Length: 113
Length: 116
Image (cartoon, rainbow over all chains, first blue to last red; front, side):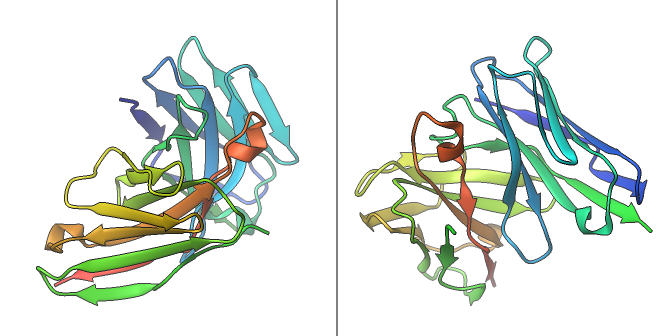
């Protein structure tokens, strides 16, 4: 089955700086790669996703890049703000997400004022 | 807005008890999922369902079963709860389709289950 590795487990950045979280996956058939943000006491919420036919996607301060050859994808957050502090999860799915997602272990992002 | 609700936020049960975790979604989604979340392990898929009365095993189905009698409701059952099933349980739903946005999984707030 699919295996997703996520790094780092904890990331501390100064407010206003950029943050990058990296994930690798093992199943070359995976074609859907969402990123979720989880705030304390809440369920994960989708922030951005990318499919295997696209190399990069951007939504305001958030961007995701995908390198299919190397089987890795990354989340980039620019101009970080205190409300970006949360746990972020990457995930991968060979079935477009319809048959469940395989998640990374999460990154605790801390924005220092 | 999509809403996924779970019957309890916190639950405490004894070893050997039968436990039911309920999940309801209000967007007529066909796909529903159960995950468990543990510190340092991320989210792991237990079971999922494509439609009423259908179920598929995920990555860690042992010790669990599910029931989907109505489209909007997906139940996770622990036949005989054990201490290693103490965890956060998250339910999600999605609407299958060709467009990327329709595969988005929407999560409920989670049920924190403690088995003593």
